[in-house]
Image 1 (cartoon, rainbow over the protein chains, first blue to last red):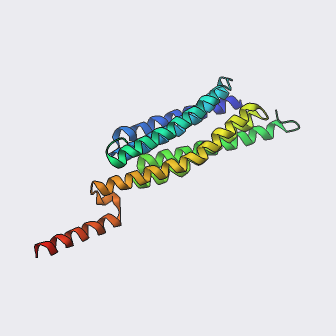
Image 2 (image 1 turned 135 degrees about the vertical axis):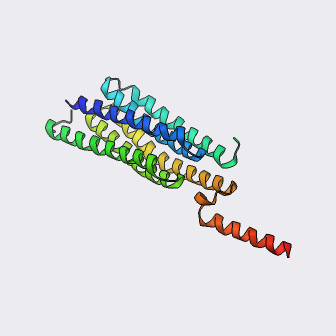
Image 3 (image 1 turned 90 degrees about the horizontal axis):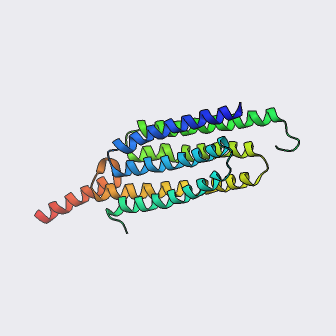
Length: 88
Length: 128
């Protein structure tokens, strides 16, 4: 019964990721797209942790941690690009 | 799994944390879709996404109980709580600098409008 709640939460988060992806497609400026990609990365971290419970594989939590680190570095690189118009 | 704890109480706590976490994530998504410009969208997503992710991860910690995985989940939670505000600060700074550089005064705010006015004044003085 409690795993059904986790399943429903995962489905809701997948729907939210699709909704945010619309903003990343539509967004008038590059900054809008950057914000949308950051929101997606937070939601995917939560989704991976939920999958670790649903499939009963605690190893997935490590993958969520690595995803969080890579997402942070990607956000820094993207914001450097938005700020200067070039990388570096 | 918590020694001496009541199972029903634990399930109620998990459901409450999970529900409020998904609610906050939903509010952030709606703000990102509906609000008019970059900074208000950022204002909607940054806080509610951090809180929503933290609540859902806390529900997962309660589900696992006292195990090694819950320590790892707490590390992920701490990492998100530290990096998400910092990343949003960096993004807001980049968006502000970009709007100033491209002269988009509608989203760059009052400081850019004042700068444009001063530039016009300087041009006027140079002509005269």
